[in-house]
Image (tube, rainbow, N blue to C red; front, side):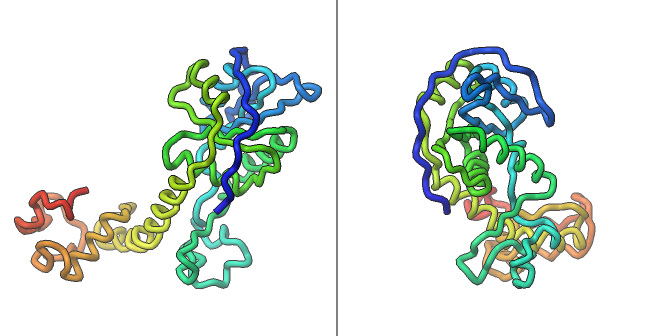
Length: 263
């Protein structure tokens, strides 16, 4: 886990017109410092947010988007780094032999954007991670820190609405990365891989193609089949594609509103 970053110097935001969108739908605000280069790099999640916020910040800022997540667990063997390809857990993306440490990689469709962000960071003297305030947004900010490895002051820029006033408050009140949200995100992704990632192919064969088995549904399925869940053992397993009308209904106990079976 990366060390928490300290907040950099605060700055006031002023409304100004942006110089329009750049390639890939990103935007940069005009900058006057450093001979025309922006001194503060702001990274948001979406290109549309980048264009809007660039207009609010004006001179001295460069606003770019990450276009969502830049890293995730490998989707194919080709994405697994060479040093891990011989490991039995590499395809799963979770090191089950070392505290369930997840393996994150930059997917091929995000490499160009990551290269652009790294290039922009070279000209910046401060980095502001302005991804969304929820768990996924915090995770994106963490992935950016892990991949970009900034050597300049870095902080989180958190706002609840996109208005000139809200952006000004966010600039004036930088925050630190919320490691609790990052840990929650990693736990969720690991559980997805340990359960849903393995169960989903079974659903494709037994029930219907392209179904996804999530963390909760997978555990419930395992509990039912092993005889440890409420009403277990009395509901025949699904052996092939079936319609809603032909599917066997669970017994009354399983259809009740017991908290253990609520989603």
